[in-house]
Length: 181
Image (cartoon, rainbow, N blue to C red; front, side, top):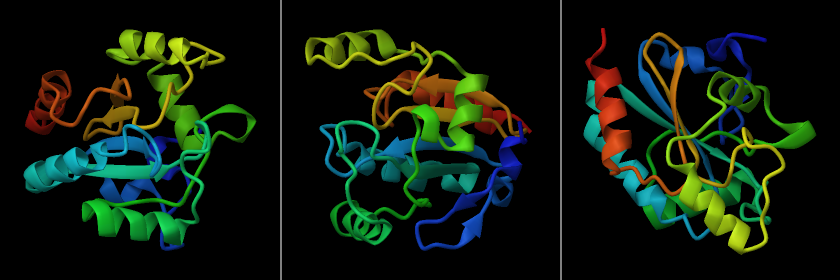
């Protein structure tokens, strides 16, 4: 499996990229969606990005349409939605799949490195009440799941979809990584 920084990515504007452009920074990788009950998290993610960017945090959004078709738009639609509705300035990438046979290599690597998410019990139970049963416990549970990557490129945390950008456990984990050289 390729190192995280070497996996080929595409920005939402179509330009080729990798995580190498963010080497030495703390990364919060989030699979996002425009038509989800959790979509308002864009505001908190942008606020977190603005607050901690100068310290070395990058929030990276990866639109995905894996959960009940909640990200149906084109990259252009998604970019416009994020800009107009949430004034998103953090980097957005081209729509990918975070599950199954079409899972993007980045997400395969993230899940392999952190197979369990902090705080996913209550959200998993809530999904079950709606008749949603994730295939495998290690799969990305829903939109807005968050992976934390340290400055050294190691995946150091994974947080359930309903763990918001201002959640004390997430903020503490980010601050701990930002404090590392």
